[in-house]
View 1: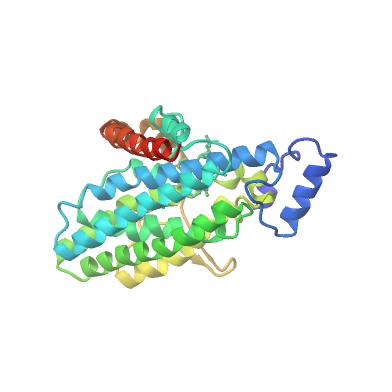
View 2: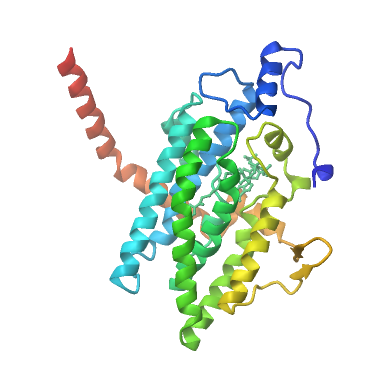
Length: 323
Ligand code: BYC
């Protein structure tokens, strides 16, 4: 896999003692903290990745929130509400981690609302029925954990620590999704059909969550060298497939890929071609729900203006009282 990647030149002045020291620390597995010296490229990549991740958590609330009022039972509603609230919390930890790099949360949010910042492609697909909530927990949160567990060991301390907490919550999310799928797959024919239909629609977009193939990923080589990413996009995608296929078998559901088969030689599943044209379309803003997602975020920003103003006025009052 590494052979396919273009290895970039080392960032900045290779003879700089700060850079040499920084790279030695990365190689030794040290954690870099907010006040430590870091190359501009490292800071920039972290701000990009952490803020995209934060935006994904926030926008990612929308497809599932669509079903809170229509959850089939009170218990399901309470669980879904808790899960969606967790995602809001993840967004906040991540904006906090990004802020340690010298950027403000407001700047990051402005970039999202202006359509300049990315968030995960997966949240531009619609949730058509209750089985989609099961599929999201099982596949989308499953993919998220697969990506995030290695990030708990990434080189930037504030990001790694946020990831540890987030992963604990994500594993509950994945299990609740798998449990919904189990109930539906063992239910009446109509429920089994809904579960299969949800798997059919979410499978390929879930594989796209891991990003483009390594051969077309401009950031992977440098991010892996700096331990901002511990594994490449293709490596994590393969791990996800290897873990998820037996789960689909357990559910009695068929993965919608005629080319999927166990490969004795590699010890992994081989799988069919991912439609990268669809992926690039979605990340350029032309997915089924991009417009609707950004509209919802802009509305939330406008609706929350009075809360932010009141909180600022309250904080200012305390500052004035202390004078
Ligand atoms: N969607 O060089 P590459 C969750 C972009 S939320 C959109 O491989 P990189 C949850 C990429 O940004 C979990 N864009 O990039 C929440 C880059 O564009 P720019 C979200 C994508 O960064 C609520 C370009 O393509 N998880 O779990 O090295 C409810 C080239 O890509 C995507 C994270 O954010 C995509 N899928 O690798 C339920 C994890 N993929 O920036 C669940 C943290 C790629 O040059 N992020 N792009 O304009 C990462 O691990 C990495 O950023 C990625 C991409 C693996 C995603």
